[in-house]
Length: 141
Image 1 (tube, rainbow, N blue to C red):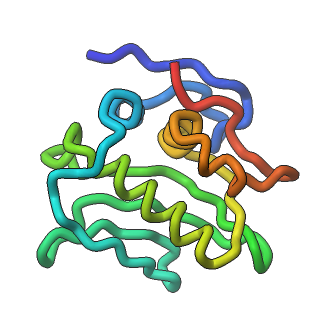
Image 2: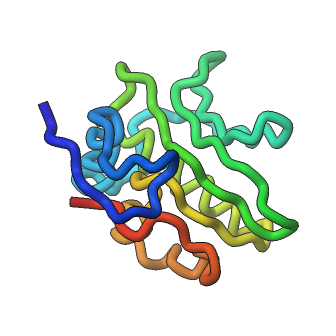
């Protein structure tokens, strides 16, 4: 079992540790920065406020968000169904979400430590972080 990781105070709902599920996804982002072996589609359900990873006719992962103003998304919490973890799904989902955010000319506030870790390991996305509202301070152990 993975030990929870402590983080700075800017964590949603007053929590300051990663859940075991989040720790698994953080490890995936750190250990396997390559694309997923699965060919999945990412759909932005703007009405529900979630980017969904779809494989066939099944949702396998998601990254919910809220809209803050006209130009900023608050990325909340990456999740991947257990049977699809450790296969690069989280990494590729985050990459595609951030590419979409860039294409739409928006910035992000990061409340998800998995997304923060991804950006720390892929600094070409750092410019997407809103300087006034960056979100969580740290994403990895």
